Image (cartoon, rainbow, N blue to C red; front, side):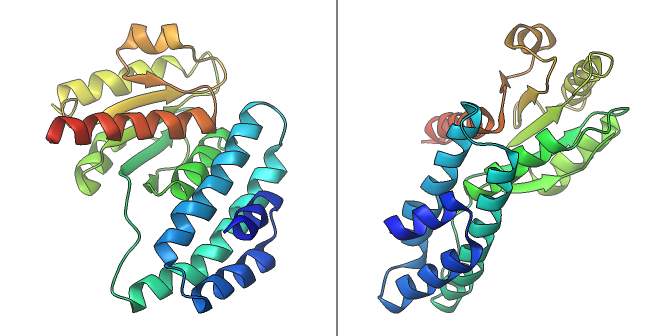
Length: 216
């Protein structure tokens, strides 16, 4: 397990796939390899990225290694009649008028690695498109990104749109982006704020833990 985790951290796709195959041959449950090696490996990379101790190329390389391992483990899970447990469904997008993608895509990568089903709407997303996608995929969480002071105000429009559509009771809203702050998130009525991809994963996990706890 530690070798697979380290292959993810080091961003070595071929090695990650090789170790994943060996784990399966040794009788390790694929879900166990994912949850106890791959996800912790990506978590570590995300945390180091958040501390500026790893950089975007490191995250992208780790993501490729994660994909290589998942490409081995998920088919084996299906062969055994099981599927990877989804932690929750997330809709992501950068607001209308803003074409910045890297930060939002990084959040998508990290959430996917953590076991969330992610629907990435892309950039310059029309306000009403968020609500439509939330309904289509029955999302638990929506992430709304803005990288400019001139476009962050559109995040308020999205929050108000989801209020009007009656979606707030079923979906949590998290906002992020360079000019965005916790104070701004509170001001516009978002449920949470994440300053980087690692915090977005933590926030999404907290949302789902609270939701599942409320359902018990």
